[in-house]
Length: 580
Image (spheres, rainbow, N blue to C red):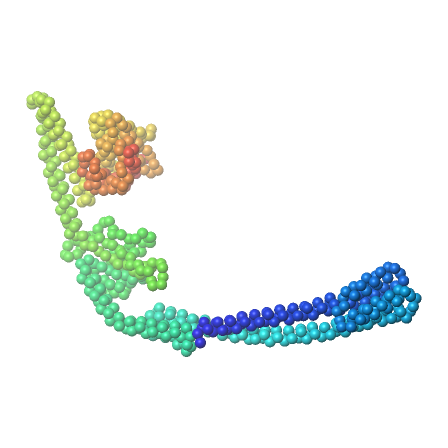
């Protein structure tokens, strides 16, 4: 029998029995109520009227008050005749009372009236007894049928209570346990229900599924092993060193190139804790140190390449730690199950970069000599002792001077770039006076500012400020920033240079009211070779990049704050000198 049919029959039968019990109870209660009402309304009232008439006779019917009381109750009795023979007895009482009224002293008539009242009371007492017997039978019948039906309801309820939950819960519990076994990859699990209901059908479907999963597992183990061998072969043939770790930092693969650069053997590392192996291997210890730094930020390729001896030469590698994350089946949150350490060999690119840097340094250095000769020749031509020049020749001389100065500046920037890229920046960090650095930079840009009628306004505190910095390179940076401010400012404007003390640093700000920088280009302003698209101003795009390198090499910082159409403010922060 189906579970649904069982539920409908059991609960339906219980519902019908409860409804029947309610109807029978209502019928019997209504019947008892009517019987009781008949006794109270009909017979009890008659007895009450008869009692009142007897009291009036006892007190003396000759008195007008008692006579009136007697007649009132007699009238009520006339209206309350309900039993067989009561009408004749009431008429006889009325006749005897009328006779008594005519002869108040006749004791025989008084006795007759009393006898009539007693007969009426007796008749109603007998009726009360009879009706009480009927009500008693009705009550007994009600108790019998209610008890029978209540017992049936109780039996049905007990049967449902003890059988229905178990019939539903036990198969579900067994099925749940079996599903957990399947989830744990125990595909030999089976469910055995002998019933022919929905649970039986569910058990057949479940067993079919488990059987197919078991066949699938058995048929795919070999395929999975083949795929694992294929992946292992692929990893081992990668030109990059690769190390795989599980969630407990145990080594699960270590390709040939990784073994080669670390000097380890596969049988000594596979399945071992990586931190245990790293105790005796400096390179491996360096590779895994980021794994044990608690950070919510995803690890990225480190900025500085690692220098490792490989391929019989000093090679360069970039390390990247790739977290392996999955969302387990049936879950919603992502879970990390391991990490892959990947080393990218960038030796070829590094060598090309070194060649490029050396080439730029060589070319820039070679350019400086002819440029200096050009400048010297121009100065000789400007000397009137050699000969006078006409206006057209003077204009050509000025053009040559501007071009040579620009070339000299470009070669200087290129040389600075080569120093930065090669890591050979030589710093002479000493206590330096801030006002001297500012005055040097302002003096270097004085002529350029006067040509555009731009005022360079310096705001210095009354107390002397001293920074711990390289004077020459800091002055070069400030000179570059002021030069840019003049270049991008409008004529007749003001450029403000402010120097203030801020905690343990000195802050130097250069503020202009020029065209400003478009917001989308602000994050790129310090990138090497970057120039704002569409600008007509000359430049290499190296000045700000070199400035950033020079300032950060002195443990300082440089930043820009700009609003397009209103101007820009470049801020340099450098450590205060110890004498501050």
